[in-house]
Image (cartoon, rainbow, N blue to C red; front, top):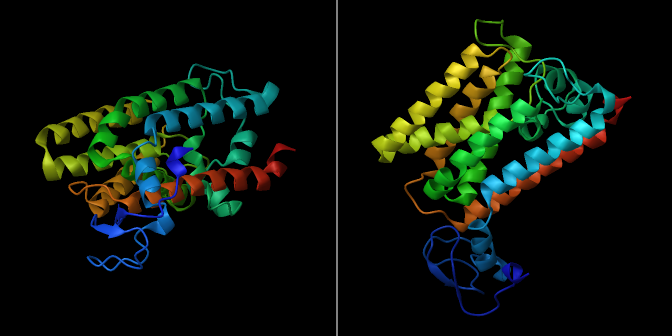
Length: 285
């Protein structure tokens, strides 16, 4: 594919500071970064960073994982009630990387904070989360860029499921705050996007801030009124997204380094799912 072509001559943009450097330069003379041409793959990395197709990637992966876990559940598919319709079995969700107090602190599956955001517990669950990803995706990538959006989404999932797991293991049950023994769903990383959107609005646009607040209120009301919602994961995801936005500084342009980090985030998420499946076969017996 042309996107992976290596540049061996000419100038490229330094992925750290954006200055023009020679593709063979040992370091950037503006910021001092070593190997700014990335062995000639710098331009390809920049092109890839603008072509992640964030919402298509997330929706496609989450729906695929839901279908696979549903098929793996066989006759154990959940059918009791509207909220649990077409829900994969608990054993399959654990095997594929569900997070929470039990997987993280009892089974020692700490990496599930990366995998749980790609799994869902029913048709309504996956449909609602994918609706928000599809609605928010274009606006978020327009403001932050595709690569930073992937980073924020990943960090939101990690912080959301980490808080939920800690709460499930050590926090008492409080009104509207259910301590999760087992948790899955894209709502934690989606709240990461909301947190980033709110941070951006505080820094640059009152309209965006009001939009973020409106989404927060709707999501919070849903979390308060509907039983079984993991509000700890939502709180942790929001905090992670907010802090990630502050660190990445959305008021500056996206850099090549962000694309490299985004690729690492996606690779780590895929590795977490694979590790869960490989080490989780015992849960299916």
